[in-house]
Image 1 (cartoon, rainbow, N blue to C red):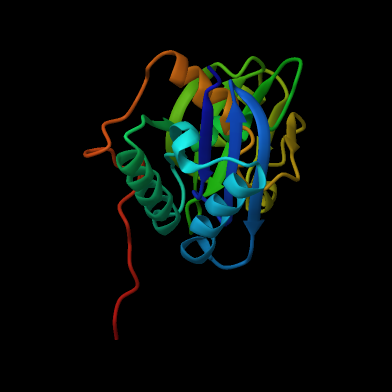
Image 2: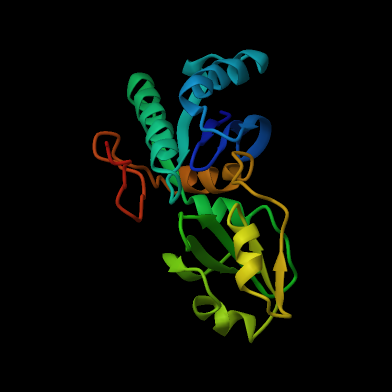
Length: 223
């Protein structure tokens, strides 16, 4: 019996959904605007991708969601939608690391991949993976300078990928630093990771699962 998984990615400005069948990517809908339009677009995208591939919600075997780190609002919208669908359909909820799926957009023979997302001011969310996507250093909120990455830059080529690349370029000017033009995580790269977790029965508790915010939410002060 085929296993159809809906993958939801809303951790950054990219609002995206994809379908995978038995771990194979099937289709994706995404939109990355300057603002955050996830609340308006996400449910429309979910309905559209199911309809154009001739599926019903009841055909889904699981829901996967990008768990963060990333935008507080984006993560909250994506996780809320995923939890609601998983609960209503009585199917498993799977969480996927946002930085890990971002790393999967790059293929290298050796060296390191550092997915790096903007955490405002001079901070970034980052993790370090090797060429086989094995986690070398866990996810952290780093001050943007060379110090957190010196050990990797001195050892081999390091590819930085993510929406924090423009400001990272201004600070890190090491000969081993390579900067990717890819800005955002994609629901397409979630498919391998979500199916792996599905096979391992690595599911989240729908009632208690929360996004991996990493940093506390800081709202705008009212004047």
